[in-house]
Amino acid sequence: MRLFYLVLLLFLITSCSEENPVQIQKKSNKLPYIGHVDVVESKENGEEITDTIFETIPYFSFLNQDSIEVNKSTYKDKIIVAEFFFASCPTICPLMNDQMAKLYHWLEKNRYLEYFQILSFSIDPSNDIPSVLKKFKDSYCDNCPNWDFLTGDEKETHQLGIDSFKIFAGKDKGAAGGYAHSGAFSLVDKKKRVRGVYNITDENGDVNKKEFDRLKKEIDKLMRYEYNFK
Image (cartoon, rainbow, N blue to C red; front, side):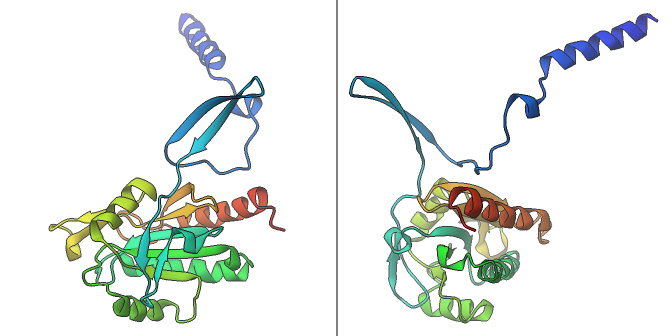
């Protein structure tokens, strides 16, 4: 009997200390913001105003597969899905690009494509020159104008992936092909704020179907609730 009351007491303590989240807050239809957040307070007409400023992708400049210089402004008002890869990658890159091609055609099928730009940043620019990237792109999607393969300064590319797109990329002599990188895709909204990172490949190198499906569901959510797509 003493044990029964002890268990009951523990249950009541737990019940009182952990409120049901469904009852205390409404489920948001908006995606989270990934990255740093600054809160800025100011006064306007004597009233205090608080603004929330979310981290955005900084300026960048690269050559695409057609040897055309592109930069952040090239993709103004476009939602971006980005990856960091290299063409000679012997492990997860082919799988990543297979999935990116599938995503491209899914966007097209759902009438989202005109609002999107897919960006594949090479982390091995000394080898991935535009002509190599052109051939590489054509092997996955030979008529995909909303998909650019980009090459530029290696150090800046690695830093852009890690600091801004929240995707790891870097040299590693012990890794296959000489580079270690994440098999993730990053979803960036029109204002260039990261809204999600999705581990498209598992640790064993297989497709992470759950994460790929989550990416598509969150694109649907972004389009429906934040951009009023019908």
